[in-house]
Each structure stands twice: as C-alpha cells, then as structure tokens.
Length: 379
Image 1: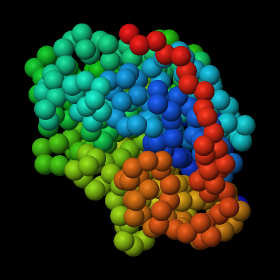
Image 2: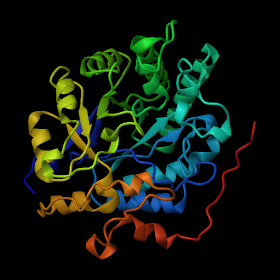
Image 3: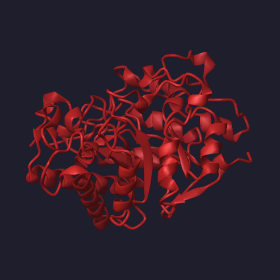
C-alpha cells in the first residue's frame, strides 16, 4: 500500500510501524482487582494482529480509590505485574507498540470505595489536601514504574474527559488558591508526575499525555491547551494526544458521525497545537472513519490518527486498509459499545458483516474460564 498511513514514524526513540493508533478504551474485561485476564489478552491480541501501529490500553487506575469502573485495568500493586507483562508481550508478539494509560478517576471514581476527591470540592468532591496530592503524584510514578517493569513501551497520562488531572487543568473545577490552583497549578501537578516518571525510568521509556479543550463556556480553550502542552515539554513530555469534551456532559467525547463530513471533529484543535509546536509528535482522535480523512490529517502535519470505536467493530481495519481495501470503517458511531454496561463489544453490526478477527470471537473462546487472582494485601 502506497499511503502516508502506512509510513513508519517515531515517538522519541521508539519506532512505530504505521500512523494508526488505538485510542484508550476500557474494554471492561479486567478481573475484580484490576488484573489482566485471558479475555483482555485475547482482545489486545486481535488489535495487534489487526495491524495497528500503537496500542494505548484502557485507563489503568493508579490507586483503588481512583477506580472508575468494574472491569477496569489496574496498575497499583506489584502483584499485577505478571498479567501486565503478558499484555505487553501479546502486543509485541505481533509487532505493535503498546502504552499503558494511567489514570485517577477523581469525581468519576466509584463511590463504594470512599468519598470522591477533587481539586477544590467541586461536583461534591472532597478538596484534596497537599498530602493527598503528594500521594497521587507518587501513585502515578509507581504505576509508570510497574508498566516499565512489565515491558510496556511507555505510559500515557490521562488528563482529559473529567478525570482527576483534567479537573486540575480546568478553571471550572480548580478553584484552589495555592500552588496547585488554576491551569498553572494543574500543569505544575502533571509536570511533577512527568518529572517523577522521567527520573525513575530509562530514557527510552515514553511519557505521553492525553488532553484537550473543555468545550464549555469558561473552560480551557485552544490557547490554554497550547500553553499547557508547551509547559510540559521541559518536564519530559514525548507526545500529546488531542481530544475534546468533558465526558457524560458533552457529546464531543464520543460524537455520533451522521455523515462523512462530520469526521475528524478534533482536527482543528490538534492542528492548532501542531502548527505551533512542530517538534512535538501530535496524535489526534475523534470521529475518523475513512482512510481519506486519516490521510488528510497526516498531510496537514498531524503525526498519527487514533481511533477506538471502529476498532471495536473491526480490529482488523488497519490491515484491511494496508491491503488496499480503502472502504470506510464499518462502525456507524452509535456508541452502544462504550456507553453500555459489561464487556465492551459491537452491538450494532451483525457478526457476519464484520471481519472474522472480531475481538469478541477471541474473547468468547475464553468465556467461562477461570483467571488467576493476584494476591493483593489489603491495607
């Protein structure tokens, strides 16, 4: 295939075989303690075999109180290491690169695990103390160390979509008056996390972030996002994935694509960043369904394009495009896959209309099989 989509590229010293990225999505297939399961490995194996260049896992919680969903992957305890290593190996066995997305849910955390924490008591959360902040920084650094030990190519820090770190970046939710107040303070917090990871990890280990604009009145706009990204580069940021939206209150997080002209709805923001920070690799996510839209973004200067919902319906989509079949993704953007409950799967396209490599088939092969539970001491 002669296309920019199939051209190799790099983040830092890590080479990636093509310009397609699997954007982080919680498949809700992890075990009760956040452990990797056979079902989860089967799903990621399908993605790697399907030709994707870079996989970013669903968000892994860095501490139990920061968990947002059942079935969510965890990265908070050494006992989870063997499973995480198997997950990294599954991607590498098929020449895909893989990053572990690490996250704290903040106000989106499961209430049964304690009271919510937030920057300044917004949305019913407890205002975090400085001691709380120090613990969160340490948790992110520890999660990244676990990912490196497991063999991941890097971590992506989740600072978008109303999770804890994005709340620190937004003036709508961060009203602190100390050094962690406002977007400046939120950027300082994320910078400390990046610096902590950099100090502990080898130089080749990638540290990237996902962030975007609020899309709400009074929230962060594109100039705020540009300022934040610029400030994080000296801390050691390797790459940024650009999104938009506030999750649950804003459809731009997972917008329905009513026509092909609605594709690439975050491209304007991503280009605004890339054109002003040309040296930093920029990934854009949001509504890509055709190879033509991907090529347009790459030609404009974006380094790579991320997708999620199309790969739930059709994990072999990258390989199909690389083979010369340029027909659009089968995904119709109904979002039933990610907005439902239980394990994520494509509910809107009948299996006979999809490739045989659909990850649900792999997952079902392990349905009913027991997974080994890690021994995690409760403190």
